[in-house]
Image 1 (spheres, rainbow, N blue to C red):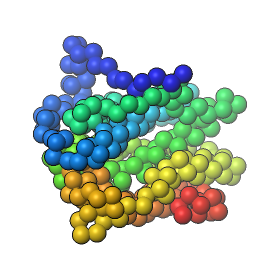
Image 2 (cartoon, rainbow, N blue to C red):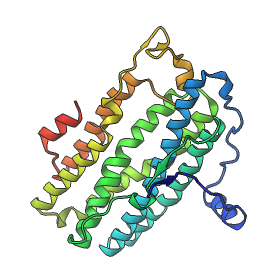
Image 3 (cartoon, rainbow, N blue to C red):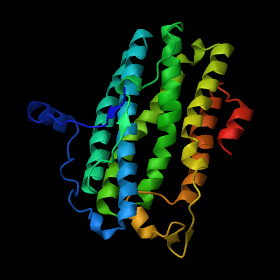
Image 4 (tube, helix red, strand yellow):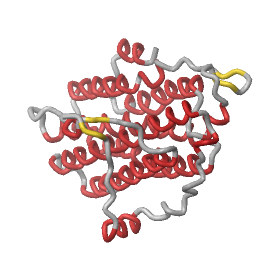
Length: 280
């Protein structure tokens, strides 16, 4: 059943504890992003974009919760599990930050989702170790390893203090998330046979395919500081975007350099024909 993507804040003891483990949020320059500065159509698109960002961070929080359960069932090293357990608070904070930017622009965009359908659920016919392998590759070795350079690109492009500082905070938090996947592979590599490595290569390319529309659907170009849609590139960057042509180039490079090449070092090869399709 699809429901509105509405978020609730409890306050009180819960807020004080959360702020203790993830401080300095209220020091960001909230209240400085003036939506009247931009064309209304661009503001509407930004509200959708930041609402989708909040939803994606929420989904990642769900994925990390599933991954933690799988790591415990697979008896992964407890310090590795402890490292991953910290990521949940990061993702919840990112949900807050991105949704607050949407609120600065006039409120979250109408968005309905199936809360029961969030996350990835490996087959129960797999062993606990195989389920952990699948979730780590999906969430960290692909998803987080890809998102980090793309968020860094958006941070480098951002021109408004609020969007820039929010993106900076997220980039700072995300760095260990992608690294975690390959730390896990350091531990599990000797336990992977050829069939499992091939299966994980398929999981990786399936995950990349989910991201492919992010670069395949982009058609906007910039000429003399104006996008194809007639928006100022300065406004686009203030609202937290990277221009489309630059995004597409960096996205393909990130997949090749931050996902495909590192996985290959562990003998996890992605099917070349399928990879060529998603990178087209």
